[in-house]
Image (spheres, rainbow, N blue to C red):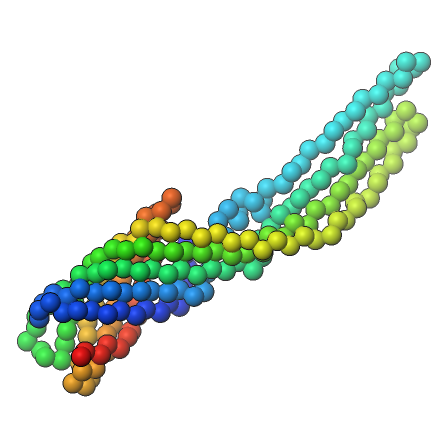
Length: 208
């Protein structure tokens, strides 16, 4: 999500209690969610760095030699980050009476559940380097980097959260049972980290 825009699709069914109020079941799907994999920024900048230093002292001389043993830098990163989201809500739909038969403004509020799934390829491309400083012999011998094969691991995460929605719109009748609607919704996903999502769309509604 993270202030990005993606296509979404929604479908709903409403049972009218009277001319003003109705109960609505709605499902919203975002098939291509443009969002970073959770923890991508942290892991992408993290690395296992360190070295082991051994100090050797010759008993017959005062010459000291230090050797830095090989060190591994994992350099992990994420690629092909993608995801999808599905939001299912039960809403109360309030129709605002007007004098125009062709217009139907309405207000919607409700709640339900959401499922957000992220997938990515975790690429681990480490290399090893070492540098032996042989001061005992008066030599400095660098050993070049030794590459290791690239490891790619597909990973995914899925989370469910309580979803609240509020919004509204207006419908325009184009046929006796056919309406074209403009709709604006705000979703609040209450998980470990609360998220907000907005949806604006145009749809077609058929009244039986």
